[in-house]
Amino acid sequence: MSNDFKKEISAMEEEIISLRRDFHQHPELGLKEIRTSRRIADYLEKTGLAVTTGVGQTGVTGLLQGAKPGKTLMMRADMDALPIQEKNQVSYRSENDGVMHACGHDGHMAILLAAAKILNAHRGEISGNIKFVFQPGEEGYDGARLMIEEGVLENPRVEAAIGLHLSTAMPVGKIGIRNGAFLAGSDAFSIRVYGQMGHGAHPESGVDAIFISANVITSLQSLVSREVSALNPVVIHIGMIKGGTAGNIIADRVTLRTVVRTLDPELRGTIQQRMDRILKGITSAYRGSHEIRYLGGVGPVVNDPAMCQVVRSAAIRSVGQENIHIPEPSMGSDDMARFLEAVPGCYFSLGVGNKEKGYVYPIHHPQFDMDESGLVIGVDTLVRSALGYLKSDGS
Ligand SMILES: [Zn+2]
Ligand SMILES: [Zn+2]
Image (cartoon, rainbow, N blue to C red; front, side, top):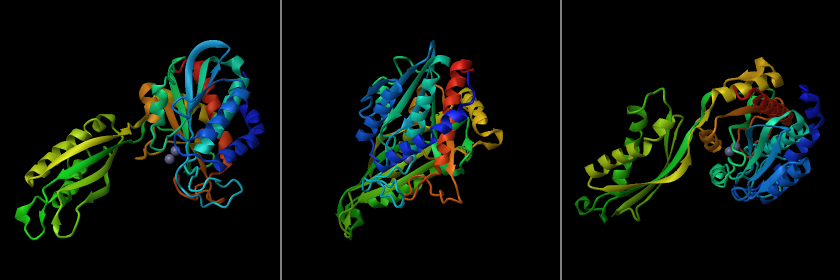
């Protein structure tokens, strides 16, 4: 087996960058990745993979069957852009007003397409299958769930998953891999607080839903500070509040929107019931009532140590031991979590930051851009991870 992929991959560097720039110029929002999905399907077909389109609306998969039978690994790239007006003045600037690849998913797709091409050229050395999964709607559309519901993990059954996210917080040439919880789960709730309308001059004539809500907002934070270990991070963010009709009327209802984040799947499972208990206590103490409704979310991204070892061994060969970092967990989230709940896997960070060149803006920023020389490193690590996994039986 040829272990020197660097040459093969660097011969593709121009193509990888132009793929990324093409996606960047034509960004599409979640579940509307029509052009993007066509482009991916064409590329995979030309590469010689078995392509399935329309998996979870605009999702695409390419199946590579190795020369010998074996396990099935999936590798995932997300496809969607964000509703952000790009502020970069570059030749490959977004052509879609108000839409921008500001989360690096353009780079993820380019990397995975190149990895598919290289791995397909090495079909003869592969025992098992690789499913290249291009997932739509990562930015809050739960595209991973849609793909899973439509059977992306079956036929052949996926046994492990690998994915990466670009990061400008890390210099180009560095790779971040963390065992266990890496990104937080994130769940959205709608809370209604009910009172009774009355004249503002006469408190006895009503039940003030705004006053009750003020207490609810402060009391919900006690869940973080007074109920959960200080070593177990939780964020309860109330980002929206609506209620009342006039300054001299007692409001009869208030709506709150909250997003709760935690790295701990077990704690996550108790959040709604804990919030409900606090809401019940506070609202009834002040003669009101409440309703709480779950609006959806995803669990934490929890990496499997054995799969991380597969990726780490590959990454060491790509960039050297001294360039492997263990990143802190982040309270951000990613629906890669859905795949990692179903099969063991590793979601890792690839550095594309470069202070000298000005690639310093974080993801979701209108000036986000990347040091594209990091893309080939991503391809190298994915290719080596796939071959490492399908050779080593994942152990
Ligand atoms: Zn994002
Ligand atoms: Zn992202």
